[in-house]
Length: 366
Image (cartoon, rainbow, N blue to C red):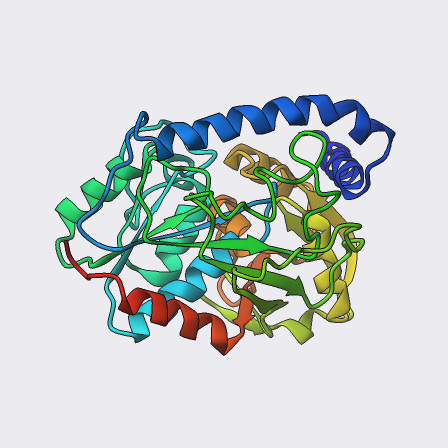
């Protein structure tokens, strides 16, 4: 990949974020398309609600985590936080996902030796972080059925990025927002929204809980339409921050402060790389080079970038799934070149209390 391409990708992403933030001229040009988009997605929801399109119900509770806005709003950190909480409460969860960016669409169980190119980077990260069963498939219901057949001890399914995937029946759903709020308040492609917000009271697929996340240090310009909080829909707050340490390919740990004063390359292949870069700078790191890749970039892209980088590279845990596979093993006694900086989610205790309260009313098996 040419060295300049990552920067062009970051500029393109920033341009779209600017369009979606305000109701400017280009957003107005795209608004008629967004009306058509809204009509089609509304018809799809009605067909599922009316039973004309099939919804698969599972014998165990299903929790769905997803976005109402386009782009990364913190779904994966939310899933990881939920998994940890559920396990502490005595549940035995499994995870299903589409596996965006993977090769193939069929059912696949993520295993220790499954390449991220086959599973998708986010499912691979979830498996490595939690160690519970993770299955991927274009049809999440098929992934969930295969998971339950292979792991009969699983008593709850957590669906990653499935808020608009209506074919899988859900018992509880969580909508995740970030610093952008609802942008300019319009639907795609004129705005950030994948579906209208706030959801109508008659929408049978409206989320049960809302988690509004804020980054410790975010470059996001405040939304002109802040997140509206419906009176009948609980909204909770959470903070995303970088961990105080970085992790190497073999599980090595190094305090993040030790990178201060050194020339560091920062790499991120997520929806909004600039947020990660700004969080690193806020921790006192000097970034001599930033590489912004498209979300779910190919592993070959990471391998090509390594060849032109000197000094330590800091990336997200999601990028590490592919980047670490490309890194040569350092000589004995030397530090690795690439390090992943975990992202920690600190949610209000009331969020988990509300989750537990709703789960208590759902049968564990049906």
